[in-house]
Structure formats: structure tokens, C-alpha cells
Length: 188
Length: 188
Image 1: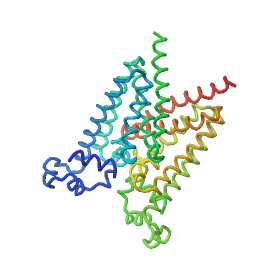
Image 2: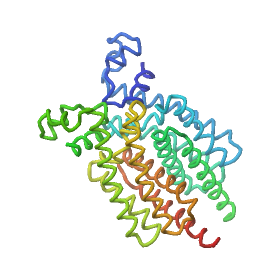
Image 3: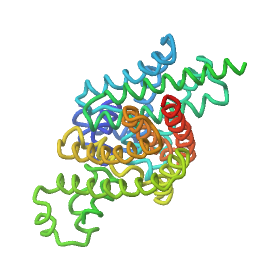
Image 4: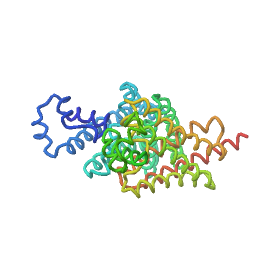
């Protein structure tokens, strides 16, 4: 039911998704929804963000740690997201962004869940940057920059129905990360 | 009525905003809505995106053209968006992003309106980059990169309830744009 809810929220937004639809598409009795999620829709939202955010964290971590260099790392991370976007008819971009834009200002639990998901991805990206040779104090801000650029590119790719911008942004990030890693080695 | 609709869509999403609410908050008779917008909600959405997108295009253009250097240009453009976000209790970020995420996949007119708004900002940013000395063939891709990074940073700023990330991303973009402009002059 969490997965169904997460997919619906991601595609239709928080306000546009009713509990009845979650129950119908999740093929579960309505009573079980209130049993498992006594706080209702808001709890369903925060737990589905945790679920989808945790899965993406794992996927990003696997892609980054297997990449031979920063350019490949950025391109493969972008490809992971680009394939999901393209494969869903440009419906499934970031699993957190819609909720962040639409519901986070009015719900502290939803805001905290979105923030937690982004933070978990930033931790993985920051860890990768350090392992690639980026200086300790630079890894956090550069991770923010990498995630910002990719999130925005996902948005542009969606309205263009073309993932080219995602690839181009990742290519540029690869060069920026490579330079940051090199810069550190030169200082050392 | 377009402005009311645009603000509601921006804060609540397309699916979460009903025509009755637009009529009530816009203080207009319901008949006038169908008179001016015979295609209903979808038309209200596309025209409100055009309106808010056009206003932001003008505001970005004014900020960029008055900036003394690329660093100031990026910081001031980010500040323009950051102030709107902070001043609205972290409700009003990009006026197009919610619609792009939530409604563009299912409505070709809404997708095209979002794409048109982004394109109009990209044109302004690209024009600024050329005037700052960035090479002709580099200005378009770099404008994509600048807009992507700022859009993503707006998202992170919103869930953190802190515009610090927006400023940090803009600072980094300033350095990247300065380098791109310098690089061109060195080649010349």
C-alpha cells in the first residue's frame, strides 16, 4: 500500500491523491489503511517518501560506487533517473520533488520526510565525492550543488520530453567534480 | 482571476485546486470564468503559467542586465527567487515547477506552457551569458545548467526552510560563468 501511495503521490501530487484511490489501487481493505496508518494520509505520505527515498538512496549509492571516475559517476547517476523518467512516459521524476513543492510548506512531518530523503542522498553523494578525492570541507557543498543541478535538469527534461539536458548537465558536473578532486591532490 | 489561479496552482498543485476555489478567491462570478476560459481549468492553467512565467522573465532580465559582473548576476537572480520563497513562508518557489511535475505528463497544453516559460527564462539567461562574454555555442548549454542548478536549489531551500543553499549554489555558478567568459576571451 505504501508503494501504491508513493507512486500516486509522485504522479498526481499530495492534494490530488485521495485515500479511496490508494485503497482501490492498493487492493487492500480500507480498514487496514487506518489500522496501519492511524494518522491517515499524512502518515501514508511520510512513510512512502521514506520508502521511495530509501530505495533511491541505495540505487544511487550502487551506481556511484561502481563508477570508474567522476565523469562516469555523474553520467550513470543521471542515467538512472533519466531512464525512470523516460520509461514512465515522463511521469516519474524525483519521487520527493512533488511532495516537497506541494505539501511541505503546510505539513511539518512531510517537510521533514522530504528533507530526510534529500539528506540521505546527499550523504551518499558526499561520501562518493570524498572517496573520489574531493576535500572534506568541500564535499558537502559540492554534493548540494550536484543534487540541485540534477533535480533541476530532471524538471527541464520532463517538460521537454527529452533527457538530453540531464545528460548534458551530468557531463558538466563530471568535469566540475574531476576538477575539485584534482585541485585537492594538487594542494596536497 | 488568472493571478488567483496561478497562485493557487503554484501552492496547491493543479489537481489540488478546484475551479470553485478559484472563483471564490478571485471574487468573480462563476459564469465569467467559463466566458473567459471556455476550455476550463486546463486553459486557466496554461494562461496563468504564461502570466507568471512572463513576469518572472521580466524580473530576471532586469536583475541580470543591471549586475556588474557574473557573480553579482547569479547572486542577485538567486536572491530574487529566495526572497519570494522566504517571504511566502517557503510556499512560493518556481511558479512553473509544480505544474511541470504534476500536470505536464497528462496535458500537452500544460506541458507546452511550462516548456515555453522555461524557454523564455533560458533566452534571457543565454542573452546575459553572451553579453558577459560567454561564447555563442556555449551560452545555450550553460544557460540550461544555470537554470537547472537554481531550480534544484530552490527545491532544497524549500524543504530546509533555509535559502542558504540557494546562495551557495549561485556563488558557485558565478565562478563557473566567470570562468566561461574568461575562457572565451583567452581563446580570442
